[in-house]
Length: 196
Ligand code: GDP
Image 1 (spheres, rainbow, N blue to C red):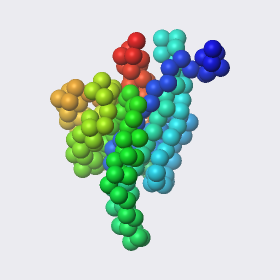
Image 2 (image 1 turned 90 degrees about the vertical axis):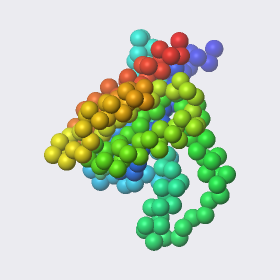
Image 3 (image 1 turned 90 degrees about the horizontal axis):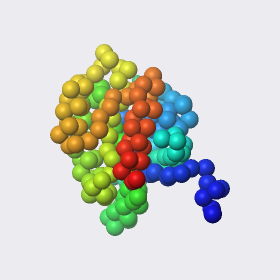
Image 4 (image 1 turned 120 degrees about the vertical axis):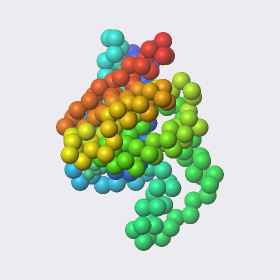
C-alpha cells in the first residue's frame, strides 16, 4: 500500500481569510515554522505551508492556504498607481472556487486593533459559506492581542459574534506566539472528530 510511504494519517486543508494586514501570513509562519516578521511584505498570490500535528495518536497533516483576493489585489495596485489589471469575472470565480475547494476548516482573521477588519468578517463569512460545505469547521480569530493599549474590538464582541454564527472563537498573537498553536490545533481536532 502507498499508505506506508506517507508521513501522515490524514490530510486536512485549511484556509486563512480576512482583510489585508490582519496577520494571516504571520499566523501561518508562526504555526508552520515558528517564525514572525515585523516587516512582512503583503501577500501577492497564494501562500502555502504544511505542518504535521498529533491528534489522538494520529498524524494529521495540515495544508494551509492564504490567498489574497484579486479584488483586493486590484485595489492595492490601483492605490500604488500601477496599471490596473483586467481580469475577467469568470477567471475570478474559477480561482476563488479552486482556493476554497476541499477546505475542511477556515480561520477567519481580524485585527483586534482595527474595528473595520472585524466589520469585514461578515463579508468573509458569506464568501466562505458560498464556496464551502456546511460542515466546514470555522474559527473566528482576533489577532494582535498583544497590542493591549490599541485594542478596538473587545473580547466580548468577538465572542458574541462567534456564538451568534455558531463558530469557534479565539484571540491570538502571532508576535507573542499566544494561542496560535491552540487555534490551529482546535480546528484540526474538530475536523478529525467530524471525519470519523
Ligand atoms: P496579512 O496581510 O493578513 O497576511 O498580514 P501580515 O501577516 O503580513 O501582518 C501585517 C502586519 O501586522 C505586519 O507588520 C506584522 O508584523 C503585523 N502583525 C501580524 N501579527 C501580529 C501580532 O500578533 N501582533 C502584532 N503586534 N503585530 C502583528
